Image 1 (cartoon, rainbow, N blue to C red):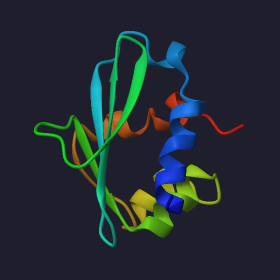
Image 2: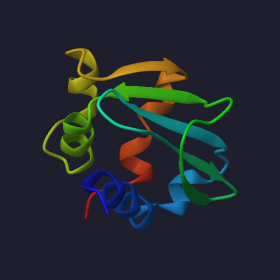
Image 3: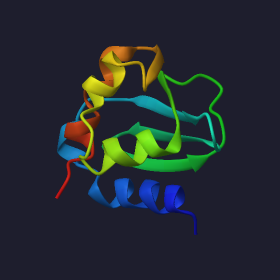
Image 4: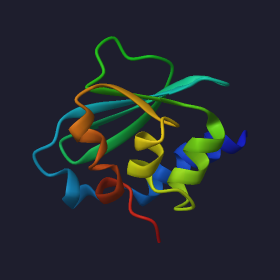
Amino acid sequence: MSAIAALFQSMQSRFNAQAAAGLDAVFQFELTDGDTTHIVIENQTCQVVDGEHDDPTVTLIMDSDTLQQVMTGELDGMQAFMTGRIRADGNIMLATKLNNLFPLD
């Protein structure tokens, strides 16, 4: 299993269903140096799916290093966005919910 696949698997295990109450969304992660993966959140469940979604709510575009740093807490997601390391398309306000949906231990 690749480090990125393991990262997405860890996100699924960290998923905070209470934070997802009332939220139906698709977060798409487009890695400039890798594959695209999307996470479907509905009915307080979380499903990680390889590949692109037809109609993601928000797409986050970055390289795999940036994804790993943000998801492990080494790099603040908002700071990465402000410095251009992450580009977003769609409902970018939704991206601010990622920390609550997938809290670090």
